[in-house]
Image 1: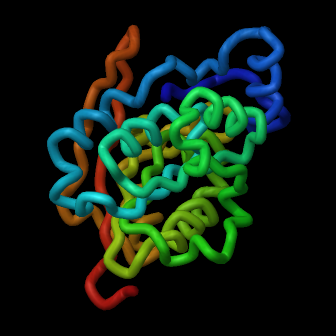
Image 2: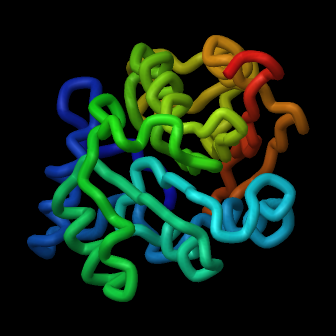
Length: 219
């Protein structure tokens, strides 16, 4: 899933309005390209086995039409994918009709209590960066609340050299220091470091890819 710099209301993106417009034939969401994220797929194929066991419980944050969730479901994981947009989830259920129970309407900031501390892996791709910078501490706190005590977070975002100002987004790209600070505030760290990668967009954009794990004794 790509990111976007358009379709904003005030300083935030109205996701449901974007998906509803797409459902009415007014053009696909600007971040939608009809496939799982390639930088997530390459990690999934090469490195996921070092992080999660076969059949593990995985949450996908801001799943949209569910392409990343589909890649996980096809590999046999127990997936809970959610988005705040009912329109997006309705289409995800229809596009992936063999797994309709995997897709849920939910707000990251009002998550069901039954999901707390449930998941072995939380997949976060471009969701934090799609919301204003002053929501980031709440976002990472909500994501961390989903983690099983021995769980991990896969995080992928646009890379920045300096903290983004409000008028630079959406999306609001993130620096390595910002991610480190956010993670540390929730008892998480990138034990295997960070990868700075170029995506396959035209022109290519720099991305940060990492896996965050709990700091020993912080659960």
